[in-house]
Length: 352
Image (cartoon, rainbow, N blue to C red; front, side):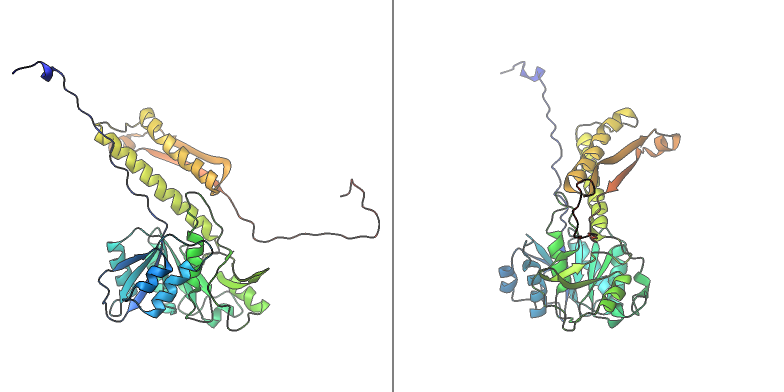
């Protein structure tokens, strides 16, 4: 029977599904003589799950369990598998192909040649690498890095932690201890006490401490009531690691917001226009990212700025919207100096 219902046409378009957020997750890569583990990457939510895995070595288990030995435990730790026949670059590239949703890297090698190769791989990515080294030259006088590592002095994404016992997974403990603080809500300092790692077998002298720090090598020493406190929390250029994390967090999260806005607009059959209308769509995304950064402690409140550039002929030809911005990073105090004078005479209130 005919009706006039066809006079009404209703079409509903939904925004695209929101992509899962990138996780600032630790990845530990361990070498296995024969690649018997079916997966290139495995994930664990607890030390109990690590112990239950019969496919991995005791050394790999100890490294993974060091992540979960921290006072604030991570919700997820990943293990990447390297075959003995592979180079580190080949293994890391294969791991990345399977699973790229991780941020901080540790590896079970302590060799300088391996550390240099891994560092080179990481420097080309939006990730960080915490290497552990027992090279005595870190503690020697002078500012030259140990043999095989001299080329890493400008490495922004690599941090080195000295430990004189190679089997101690101090690198894993440190990485998990810091990345457990979600950068969406915390800009955590990287000078901190770690747990589950034995102190150095041999004591470190003041001269050795100063020598290591002059090379931007991090040391794990007693500090107050903490026996295993890592200082200074820097990369090999001497930059605080939290600054690298802040920059990466801002880039990753803003890219995701802009991509989602573009996908949603296209799903509605709309453009993000060049000019004021497009700026009105994108400016709130940038400003909200700055606001989230201020709230999390990445940036000094009120010290962020974004300027959108009027489109030029070249911008119109390239279908491009450009902007510039600035933000003042929130700096964490590490050195504390106080100067007091105690005297026998009365202290006037005006002088106090």
